[in-house]
Length: 77
Image (tube, rainbow, N blue to C red; front, side, top):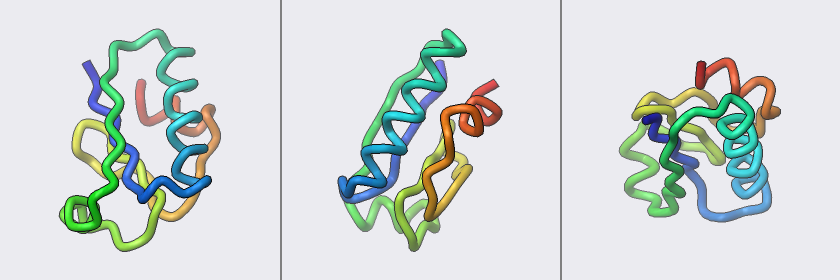
């Protein structure tokens, strides 16, 4: 099971990243757990200084932008 973490405060970009991530995971048919990390100290713990960001299994894949579901699929395979 993949652990998908959207790092951000809940802004519109953060919500869009969560939607795209969920769409990518569902398209691939993988088992996943989605977590929204909104605590700034926890976000900085990942070394992230700009949101939104996406971490897959604890590894940050993108920072400061909203990739498409197609781009996200590459990180989930």
